[in-house]
Image (cartoon, helix red, strand yellow):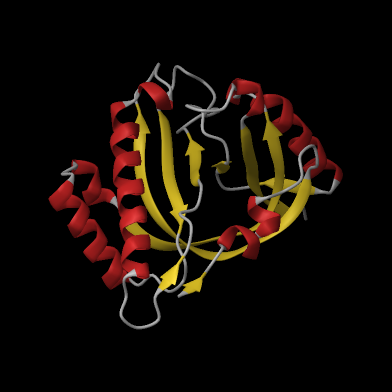
Length: 209
């Protein structure tokens, strides 16, 4: 059975060094994605909509891995990738707890995962663990392009410290922010202490004219 490790294949994007802000070119990648909105005044850990979205996203991703391993022809095993999310609000900053946070949560999928496999995986999850959020799941390619990126080590609440370094780096490089704030969660907040959490922070940029 062939084994695939996307973390190694895209090491600069998913295993960056801590304490270093870098400029990266993110290629077109395939994701299982789901959109949602977190209620005003709540964080992701308190939101029912976010919880249901995570159950749907992880359920489909682990089912796809099992289906890939069980294929009669060319079976492929691979680890399920880390949770990622794009965050934004209609106006202002997504860090404002008074505004409803909008998100696109996603998990990277190998290129051999087809729309047919994805639809079958979603159907299987619906039968085993019914969840209205499954209707919002989709398989899409996402091309982020040129981005400023850094690995933040520590509590989520302390992210602004790293974000300021990223903004300063972008300004020094003659870059302007565009698109949505992107986070990749390498640590499990249920298991790791807050000071040991590892989160890749990324933001797409463009060259200033």
